[in-house]
Image (cartoon, rainbow, N blue to C red; front, side):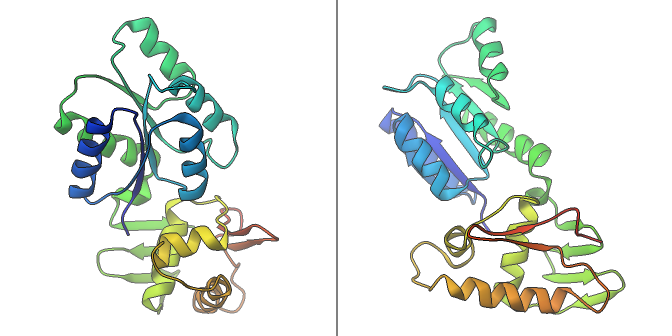
Length: 231
């Protein structure tokens, strides 16, 4: 499953260049050109990482970063600031409001991609590892194999993608609409109750007699992998 990046950049040529290079590297990319639009896009897409320009029209990048960190559902999304400001005080200010990294324009695309990979490995290790552990559940992403304890868990392709997506964000609640976009794709029409059906199948396959159910249902909100229930 492709990691999702939201690019918040008002310079159209740079935004296009970033989108092209990120998509070439295997990321799914969405672009916003100003702060309010960016806040809506981040809420809708729940990205794995945000590239955020400091100098934005109307609402500054610093303010966007501050707002994202203040909201529970976006507080842990990695943010890399892009800016022409190279002074140490400005870099410190960007990091103090919650940015995970900071790169000064003009920058090398190779360096930016390396920094993105480094932040992903540090903050979202499940995106970088071939084998992911969650409690007593082990997922081999390369081989598409799942084990729980000493037994193999047999999942269909959709259930595997659901589990993989939830594993990338343990504890984070996803609405049915967000899971539809992430697992089925935003260009495919599927009824939201389909998510409930596949979550039910995933639960049935994962949970044997006496085992805790690691999938938490949040009423009127969606589903999450609950670390307190795993293992």
